[in-house]
Image 1 (spheres, rainbow, N blue to C red):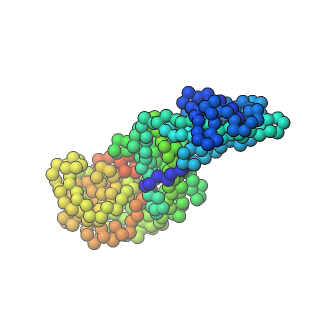
Image 2 (image 1 turned 90 degrees about the vertical axis):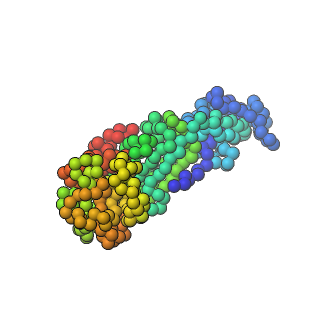
Image 3 (image 1 turned 30 degrees about the vertical axis):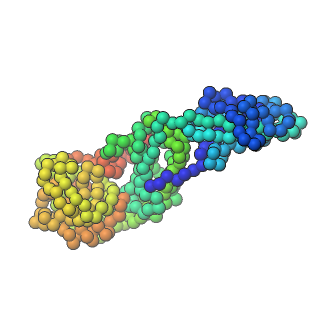
Length: 393
């Protein structure tokens, strides 16, 4: 998913004679009508005294004026992005809505007004220090996609997030029907930090979801964000796949009614080849792929191309065609952990399910419940447990 580029946050601004008080902000001369290094006013009026406080990366800018009021404050970066802000009571203070971004040059133009109504304009500039590290992220599901009712909104971060509360405050989820939900922080199977937004219950079909990640200028603790992200998706049909490993059958339900039952064979009982239980969400429809058991720690039990592969966990559990196990479909669990079915059933089932459809898997002899970070296992926690994983709880 490509990030949506937003204008760089722009900082600081105010009236005549801008006084920069933060150590990271430097007044500078510019070409043409730019200010002198002392920040002299562009016009000849006697300036109001203006002070810019803490225009450092990762902090909002606040500006105060004495001997006059602030009429217009404009702060822009080199790309023309303008930072908006709010003027306080009495028009003697101004605070930026956004934070300063590291490694960015800003120009400040402020018009102030004296008590006798005279206006003057001051221009100045400053730079924020380059970030030591830049944090990026990966979003799922993809933008403008349609997914099943179990798919969370998921963010995986490239670098560690130690300031989780600061980051979570910048993540704004809106839905078309006021869906109740919560962020929860988990450790992704890759070992990276991840934040998922899960509704209290499965999504309602037709729900439109939007995420505005206003992260530009936010310090994650492991690195700075230097852009915003915007994504959205739509929830499709109400489908749930129920897998009964004790009876070796899979049932596809749509709108609460069974529309298809398929005989299957799950993971072999009694060892590492057992399947996972709990709710796993269909992560991807990968088609024909090569499966090698050595990649999931099972020795050289198999190395073959497998058709109609549907990924359920990062640890390697799939639903797929397994014609070599035909004698066991509906009778016994004899796979290496996946849910196998005939070529014919796999073909039609593959065409019927959607990424994001939940697979509710039950069985007495399994190797445990799907973890939150092993794919999308958030549904295996109660609502109270999930909400407690928010950094703002």
